[in-house]
Image (tube, rainbow, N blue to C red; front, side, top):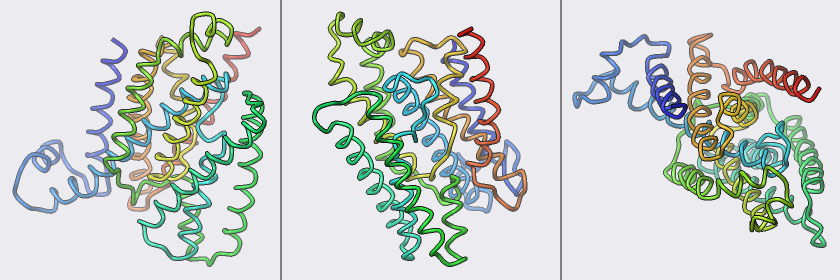
Length: 321
């Protein structure tokens, strides 16, 4: 029942996005543009502008939410998010370097993904040095690497011209205005969902502790490595498409658990559906609140995410007491 409601919400979010914009379109106009063959302004707006952006927003929301679920399992911290281990920082340095050098959108994407992969490799290598891998060591390594990326980001911002600084800031805040989702990202999301569902029993057991998981035959160390690499690659793909869109991977998994989806067989697909819907709605608002001016979608997610985060902390404190 929960997944059915979330599926309906996903369809509603896509329809809302296609109807939203500086140019008002009716439902008839949108449906005609989607399924008709004749050329026209409405068809161009819907098919070439709104639909690709809507698909990209849903994909990014799904990737971040799935990564958030995995990261919270890996770190055993319900307040962990996809950006906590420095992946977004590495991607940001790569993307801002491309902007600083005047590179095209293609080079921006390539540089961002290369920076994210470098951060993944760096954090994993340092955390696993001497075969002393632990959750605490991984978390501390991620925090330190993130601080290093932050210093490089500030250096790039302070040495850039005024024209490029605005583009950099929009990317850092999360922006979908130029985003297009490739088939690689779609395949990655589907593979992540399939892998997560295949490992759902092991994930359910792992949340109860390492000893219980090992007793029940789960290879804990191998599973942890798999989870780290999966969450990192999912986050990297999302960041390459839309920049650093915060709070999606933190808030959405909690919302699904509150709605009763604690079993990972339901939590994983539920998080993807709700995360995609949430970011599509947020991007629609970012396009329309100050139309024709557009806000970075990360601003909207932060405005929703901050009070939601406070409520989560408050509920956690109430339950623990």
